Length: 195
Image (spheres, rainbow, N blue to C red):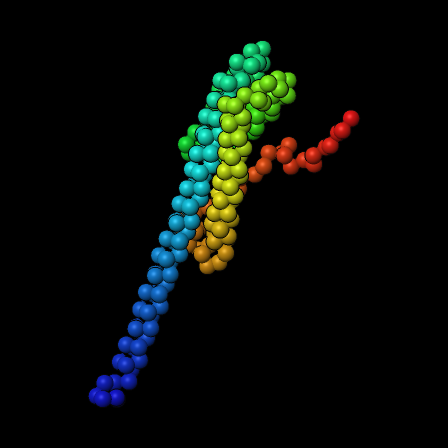
């Protein structure tokens, strides 16, 4: 007995207090880790939205380029109208769908560049030059948006696969996200032909 309290009672209280501290610590860690993973998901969603914004801006700019280009190249109309007929990236569409939309717009840009080569006076048009500059700026912003998205996806995916946060991710149903990847044709080596 210590101060009139049985030693067994003191040990029991100490064990209960220790178990309570461990349970409270685990619950706190679980909630904190779960919230961190959810915040990472929100960052990924925000980054996808950034890609959507840039793809939409690119689509709108290409549509304006089409209007200017139509005046210079009427017989190229079918090729350029394809830009307008392309579907815009839909809010909530998958990364694969966004990549497909981007591939279509890349092809349209190539077609516009071919028209510019055939009609050099088009390059000299002030409005077209401004829009062309805007497209280049949008392309840089789109690249940055992709890098932000992939960075956020990397952080989320790492947290999901590393123990002990993988335990919380599994319990909350948080799964890995896909990275935004380059089109297959852009992964190929560039062939230089000067003939």
